[in-house]
Amino acid sequence: MNILIGGISIIICFTAVVLLEKFFKKEGLYVWIAMAVIVANIMACKQVNFFGFATSLGSVLFASSFLATDILTIKYDKDTAKKAVILGLLSIVLFNIVMQLAIAYIPNELDFVNDSLKTLFTFSGRISIASIVMYFVSNMADVYLFDKLRKKFPNKLWLSNNVSTILCNCTENFLFGILAFVGVFPLVTILEMQILGCIIETIIALCDTPFLYLSKKLN
Image (tube, rainbow, N blue to C red; front, side):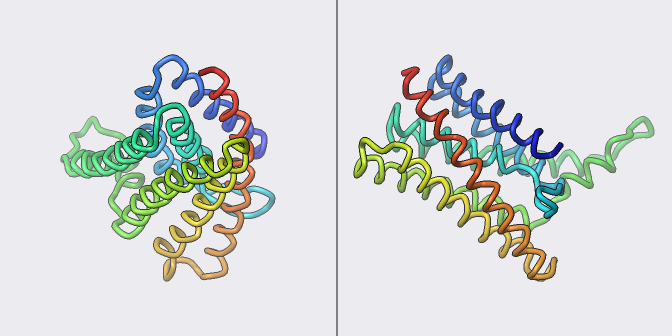
């Protein structure tokens, strides 16, 4: 069931990226990236099994930000893609600040969600900082690498897309696991989660290539 839901999520998210750019141009992708980064960080709190191994959710939404910046680089320019990454960074930082303020309010006797909000959004400095830093570094690296590869191999868009996305996404996955969880989980568990995460992210990256070509065709 998880694999089926994952496939549906890929189709919905990547189609949304293409359609947002088609109808709302770069502004549509700015909105998507800001939303995707915030929601992916919330989804990452949930642990699920794929192929019998544990991993966290959020991979599809994180990957969709790479597709969005690749489309921005192709249809606009590298600076436009960099601006989208910075907007995503500001979105997740401000979201964390606002949620800490929301948790700080003293609930009244009618409240029934405060404990749940605390569970989800209580600031975990190490994990939150690792997530924010690795989002920014990996997406910026993807923008630069994709731009260089597409200029070097102008007729091999699939190569530029897959190499940049897979390399940056998997590097981000491993470094985040090390920064966030070493000393919290056993090293074997961390490696298991990150290896599976890289496999899943590689599959997702391969799946986004047809959507990149579709977006280019809809120019």
